[in-house]
Image 1: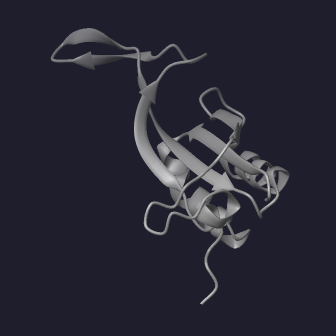
Image 2 (image 1 turned 180 degrees about the vertical axis):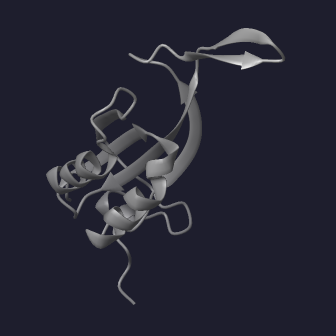
Amino acid sequence: MNKITKIEIITRPEKLEELKEAMNAIAVKGMTVTQVYGCGLQKGHTEIYRGKEVSINLVPKVKVEIVVCEVPVEKVLDTAKRVCRTGKIGDGKIFVYSLENAIRIRTGDEGDAAIIEPKS
């Protein structure tokens, strides 16, 4: 059984389409995308709303979750860093997790068989 790794990319929403295309180009077959809000070094910003200054503490981001066992993890990380980096605060973070198991609910396949696309 191949090692299963989950990669979680939290980045700017405007980078999502480019990131999806880049992952597709390196044979990443699936991903889960969630709209999230968070704060880090940015610590939010202030805006004027109805004449009053309002502090916006949470900044909109997207979280892209990818599980791989055939595509090399370093290839996914290098691609994500290249695509998501603007060099400004707010580019995001990448987290890498080792997964103990994965199960395809429809077939009951476990481990890398649950992740790998079945042969036709």
